[in-house]
Image (spheres, rainbow, N blue to C red):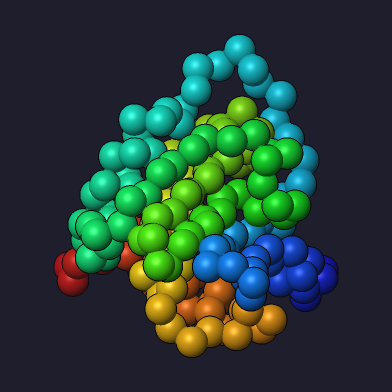
Length: 161
C-alpha cells in the first residue's frame, strides 16, 4: 500500500517546465485527495501570514533579489495531487507561490499552519535551485532533495539532554 501511495505521489509531482518560454515551476505533492468540510471555522492561513513567511524565508535562503508574489488558492487552482506550487521567470527574477487554502486541507487543524509554512519553504528551495541544470522530464531527484532540505530546515531542534 505504501508503494502505491508513493508511486501516486511521484506520478502526481506536477513539476512544470516550459521549454519554449522562460517560465518554470514546481509543486509540493500530497497523497490526500478528500476535503474537509468545515467552512464555519475561521481561516488559519492568511495572506499576511504567507507573505511574512515568504519575506522571512527569502532572506534566509538568499532570495531577496527576487520579486515573489504569494497567493492562497482553492484546491481546483492547483495541479492535481498538490498542496502548493511555484512558477518563476529566471530572466525577470519573478515568482508566484500558490498555497492551498486551509478550507480545502485534509490535515487536522493543528497541523495546517506548520504544513503550509513547510510548503512555502519547499517552493522557495525550488526557486533557489532554479539556475541549476535540472532535467524537467525527470524531477524525482530534485523533488527528493527539496523535500529533505525543507523538512530539515523546519524540523525542531533536538538538543542533547
